[in-house]
Image 1: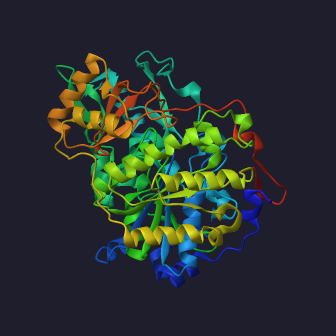
Image 2: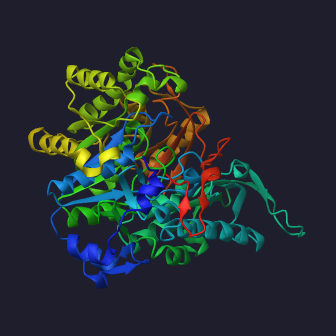
Image 3: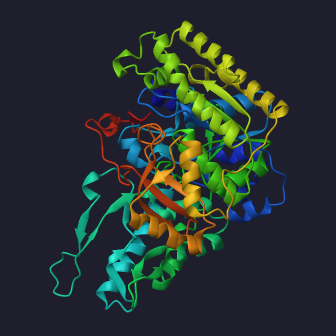
Amino acid sequence: MSSDSEIAQTTRLRSIIELAGARLGIPARELEPYGHYKAKLSLDYIEHLRHQPDGKLILVTAITPTPAGEGKTTTTIGLADALNRLGKNTLLCLREPSLGPCFGLKGGATGGGHAQVAPMSDINLHFTGDFHAVTSAHNLLSAHIDNHLFHGNALGLDPKRIVWRRVIDMNDRALRHITIGQNGLADALAREEGFDLTVASEVMAALCLAESLDDLHERLGNMLIGYGGPDGNMPFFARDLKVTGAMTALLKDALKPNLVQTLENNPALIHGGPFANIAHGCNSLIATRSALKLADYVVTEAGFGADLGAEKFINIKCRQGGLKPALAVLVASARALKSHGGAKPDQLEQENSAALLAGMANLLHHHANLREQFGLPVVVAINPFPGDTPAELALLLQECTRHGLRAVVSYHWAEGGAGAEALALAVLGEIDHTDNNFSLLYPDDMPLRKKIARIASRIYGANGFSAPDAVLTEIDQLDRVYRHFPICMAKTPYSFTGAAPGQPLPVHAVRLARGAGFLVVLSGKIMTMPGLPEHPASERIDVLPDGRITGLQ
């Protein structure tokens, strides 16, 4: 079969202006085109949509990820294409890929096979410049902090208690911990600093949760930069450095959602890109709300497994945005389940019923969370890989049925929307005939300690959480002012807790994301700046003489 990039490059795309008018009724004057196949929606038009009725929101999530592959984004795109094939006015909502994983492990994040969004190379690389705007706005604040220290530090910021780090949209472990200010000037202030990935930036989180330009301006001003003052404990915020206006100016266009299309010429909004293991992992609220006004069905996804992406989609994004999902699709593959069941990476092509059955425990845990903790109807989407045997797929369907799960094998990767019609029909059936008792996991006024413990216990299966006394004291101090904030867990995406079953979740730090409106809780050995693997995907990316890019997937 042709590669993802070959399939994408041989597909004929429609003019985005023409597509927007014909499929969504968006006038050309309300779009800001970036070439022929990309455009941004104007904020005035989005405001115009405010009083339109909402469509139904479908959340696609997955089992715990493995190197074997699950195919969440591919399934999300295939499902949207299939719903459109069935005559349902459907709009796709995804996050923008980060250059970090594009050049690191993934090599791209626009789907695969015949279920992709396009233009694939543009979306995977610079797209419309949104990530560069986030990086620039974030680092402008960093520059203002050090400039303020250089010019006398009138605020009295404690250089050792500055919590605002720099960001870059590239995996680079050498930048995790650095020393800055070593410029040879007698009055320069050298201090320890570090970089996070742009997608972990609070600016990115604020962009994805802001409801308007004014709301974004306010969120940026509320961002905590450090402590100081007479007692060393006075908090200081971005607004104290009078930089909020300039940051907003850099982000003005980035706030506008991006409109593109699938390979089947169905519309898609791709906007924002926070990671789900260190941020809240969802596309922008403004894009999702716009989509709900423009379509009868909106298909979106949340990053990594349901314990991370779906949990934060619900407890952060749905809470702040007043959203109510109609259903969750839980993506699994036989390969990934065999990996969870103990099969080694070089054995995944071999039929292994015992490993498949053992791995079912992971799927059942995620399904129970979605159904019992959040009250959502759930359809299991089995994403087949070329090496899967009919016996394995039959066994997987049989086990899902035995446990009372609605499951469908979906062939969107090989057949596009046509291969996902059975999944689409199952989704429509569950939405129409299964009770939706959607609820958040915890109320706003629950103490922060109890919120963390509830996530750890009910979602991960841990025995509450443990933390050093200093961290517990910090949580209690934050609770006095920010008890109403939701929790954004930053933990490993590759297991529920990173600890032995029945043990407490180990928490080593907390960060106040005051502008984004949540408390980040860091667990285990989670890092906010990943490194590149031994053989990064960037080794396979190249440009042909005719300008076509190869190696992205």
